[in-house]
Length: 126
Figure (cartoon, rainbow, N blue to C red):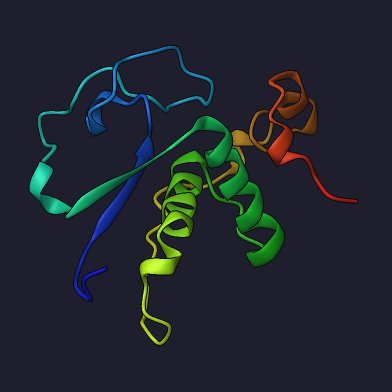
């Protein structure tokens, strides 16, 4: 990975990142259109993640960093995780977490919600 490379994490079925519009599992994810202000050149590449990966990212941020972050932040977390082996061992890496998690308490952070969607990789470890 280039030392000055920027990347963005996004939902694999989001039109913003080249996917096709589909039903949403996580509230607010999977935009059906590109906003007028969107500029493709801002980031060097996009790393696409699934709904389940977004949930895993949110739950990882909560359990390891005590950050109650929203779905977009979970996408960023998992995008960085996917390219960790490309980042030099002594490099400084910055993640911008664009949303808070309190509006996801009944979804992403609810064990029942996760179970109902069969997101087996998101289960809490005892």
